[in-house]
Amino acid sequence: MNIAVIGTGYVGLVSGACLADKGHKVICVDSRDEVVTALREGHCPIHEEGLPEILERNIGKTLSFTTDLADAVGQSRLTLIAVGTPTHEGEIDLSQVETASRQIGQALRDATERHTVILKSTCVPGTTRSVVAKIVKAESGKAEGSEVGFGANPEFLTEGQAVPDFMDPDRLVFGADTPEGLDDLRELYAAFPDAPRVETNTPTAEMIKYSSNVLLATLISFSNEIGNLAGAVGNIDGSKVMEGMHLSQYLTRMTRRYGREMAQISGFLQPGCGYGGSCLPKDLAALVKFAENCGVDPVLLRAVGDVNRGQPKVVIDLLRKELGSLSGKTIGVLGLAFKPDTSDTRQTPAVPVISELNAAGCKVIAYDPVVKDDESISKAVDLRAADSVDQLLARSDAVVLITKWAEFSDLPDRIRDMPDPPLVVDGRQFYDPKDFTSKYVAVGSGRID
Ligand code: NAD
Image (cartoon, rainbow, N blue to C red; front, side, top):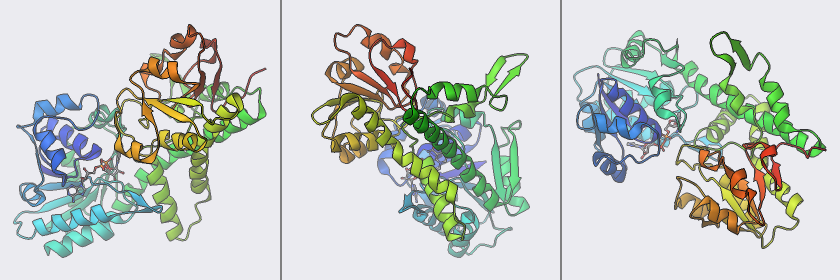
């Protein structure tokens, strides 16, 4: 199938490249010249394992890049919308979806063949119908059904493992309000015959995506509240509390073949310095506002966000408890990416933590294996970059682990022989406290007597 993908960010690029690898002819469109130029020259603009290889295999064959949306849509039978859907003051900003819909509609004015428009961006329930379909029909003058069709196909990839997630999906969600729209989605994913799928109408598909993301945010905030309580009471080992919970048969099961198998969701049942990224904070905020606009009071969902916003302060309180006044102290921050294996720093918890440290009068030095010279971070907070973990350790009174990069796993060995090792504040319960011979504290755990 000939496909146009509008928006070549994380989702558009990974989806477009993987669909091309599966045999579709894909044209990825982006309004940012520099993204298209870089990709045409074979440079992958994001850090995502396996993606450069897929690009290399397909560019010039089944995959191409352009800034010309009308031309891409004109050459295609189906268009995927994968533009950004940020929030402004908590409310979803659909302006990129609206613009893309308008441009697609205009590109379809002279189309002679039926075209399908699928919304892949995460949008509040009702967007496919009341925004995309409405604008595309008005701009194109085409009739729904015979000339133009619509669908919602939310994306569930996780940054850092986006390629395997797309290529071996845990689920496919097909939202369509007409049989033709559903047939197009089935054809789009014909190369994934074994993937479990839900076929439903478009608002239900849109709601599935929000519910899935908000569940994860809820589990993290739940764990943080339990962890904060453990930390406040004392003599409660927060990591053991979680370990004990994880062993429940709901979260870990015994299989004859593999033995004990822990459900992946246990990874979200863990206290820490809070969740970030381009999805959980904005999707939670958008759903809260959406609920309020629908006359529903989202008590639980609002609390999930409140707990998360409080976690950076928990890190600072731990530092204060151990070091006293923080003014003039040098604090090393390990990790700037919002999670390991990605270069994405959108809504990273590193920023509110560093911001609190700045306010407390600390000097901050930071090291991340992948994130270097990130403009959004340097604009938001005051920090200096360290060249290596060892340089950071040598200069810090305390270090705070924000991102669970594998490169940081040998921290206990690195500091063991230091004459004056820095305090370690573990913002992710990443380490085993027993591995430290010097001072170590973790968010979400009390001091054990
Ligand atoms: P992104 O900001 O990385 O990419 C969006 C791209 O769209 C940008 O490159 C922008 O230049 C381009 N764009 C915007 N309007 C355009 C237009 N009219 N024509 C051409 N290009 C245009 O965003 P993303 O992280 O890829 O997210 C896209 C959507 O997918 C969002 O709704 C997001 O919530 C959702 N999503 C993201 C993830 C993720 O892990 N990042 C996972 C699942 C779903």
